[in-house]
Image (cartoon, rainbow, N blue to C red; front, side, top):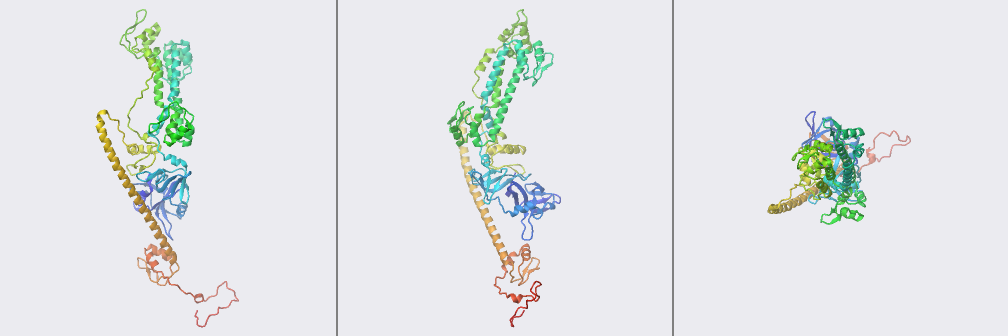
Length: 635
């Protein structure tokens, strides 16, 4: 991305010859199409057409020069109708006010940002307006698909203002985590259902177990003792496979695989619902978000910045809640709370619950350590004390009717596992992780982020989109983008570091005051610079208009001195009439001011008959005679 004013004055170099062709005088935009048409190199004049390089002929835009193929890439308005139409329209985006269709002022356009590769307008730098930055007085307005250009203002859709609002901390990841939080209850219900089904199956007959597994998807591979894979993960279990599992003593393991498939399918469905709901909410308007949230049950507590609880978990969201959330800038959080819970956490909890239920059955002893020797009634040793119980030990115990003794020997009893299921820990695990580039999505950029070649990745005031985050990753400036949006995160200090924290806080406060003063000074400088630019432009425009008025007034009048070109050739002699050709010649020779100062302003009394030609007009009446002329008047 590049800023329009940054390219002005750069040399245009032809790759074929290596010579400098021109300099960039201006950038010609198609405001309706949000596209750069050309780079203007010569504005033209009375008898010369404007010259420009169509953007599609630009090879590259570097930090110091613009590269084109060759001199032939420079065209004129006589050859390019679109360019001629754009220049003749006299529409200038700079200084135009940006208004939303509902009348909100987004500021006055000070510059235009466009993609240096495609020429597509990506946004506008605006001064003042609804989202103006307090320190710089400027903001970034993203370019919509369609812009309605008027005489004094450009009208953009309401969605542009919505896209300029900063999302809550955490970016898309935080929003998705919040959106997932309210689905946890639904997924836990799925886990409870699976748990109940498996507990029944653990004590069911083999026929009941076979009926359960047939038609279900295996959640993992099941391999027989000879290494043959009986069923693969993702494969639908058949009656034949159930029979083979029974014959091989693997029916319990097959039941476990079928239960894992149920968990995986349930997780996939919940994840798809959560993702779909989140994607819909991410692009929804505020009104749609409010409509969506009202009437739904909050999946988690929603607290305002001042600590006030807006809506509690399990409480039905009302229209009043939605209005308060919008006023507090928490509408996105309210909508996500109505959507559902952290998908990954929900999956982990559900998996742990189901795994706990598996531990309550005979298969749960596998992997545990035997607390004492387990013997059959005939005195055969199944497993010795201190040995890890394997599937072979379990199968041997099932064959000899010693499963109960094997379970008793396991160090962790099934009752403890059931107790863990019944009372899961409610204490969340808090981890401190470094922010990633995904966390910047939805946040406002505090300072410009540039790539190595000077290309702009993100500008101050811009809201980071997934496309901007991806561009930062590709250009290896993701850390700069994180610093420009989220700042530098530091973990909480321990009690022994309190004094250091206090000093750091004081230092940070002083730095903030200094930064604030610097920002205010910078804002004042920017304002003065802008006013100076506006004044210079106004004066230049006024001077040009005054000169053109003098040119029009001089045409047809005689000059009272000889007008010489730089090579001393005579453009006009004394008494000769000023013509358009003479004006252009004087302009080309940089002596137009001399010509205009030499125009005779005396009033001339002209006798029409004195300048009458001798010949009679070819279309005159034949009966019309010669005019009567006074004796003392000479023709």
